[in-house]
Length: 236
Ligand SMILES: [Zn+2]
Image 1 (cartoon, helix red, strand yellow):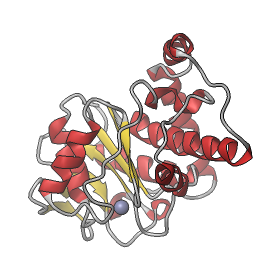
Image 2 (spheres, protein in one colour):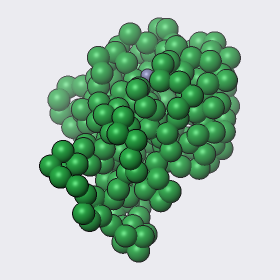
Image 3 (cartoon, protein in one colour):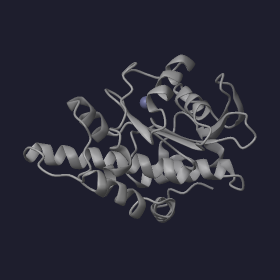
Image 4 (cartoon, helix red, strand yellow):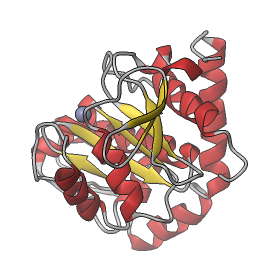
């Protein structure tokens, strides 16, 4: 993270989420920790993921003050500031309104490793933040969400969406993509009939090593960034 320009990485993370189909018009946001410890760089309010460029990124303090950049901050900035405060190992956070995550969370059943996608989220079962299904707009609610996430790669937010966190933007974005797909896959299977098989603990541990090392998360992220560039979504 140290050598990464946080503004550029924030642009890349948000446009990659657009390329991955995570958009909900102007809602949802990705953030990157400020290397100087002032807060988080995140998407400005009022724009879609694919519309983000360097002029539409803001530096937000833990108190919600916009310290730099153009535009307004999202009201749900505490998701990012409080989660990064609670997770010194983390460098980036993603929040999206994945419809698959919302639909799956409504079933209130464990997530199963039906494919590679769910593997980072099933041992233990993906946490659910149930403090509110409305907006996470206070530091207290952000802290409660961070406590629900704990050491996990993210959480479901029933009636709302998902939140993911990782050591860098590549990981946080890819975890959001994987969690969204894992929910969609399980919804598809459960709609067709009862689940009968999924990876056991041994296969899950093996897949964590073989399918999702940091190198693969980065490879997937670089692909999404290239896709964003190809489709003209990349910012300046
Ligand atoms: Zn939201």
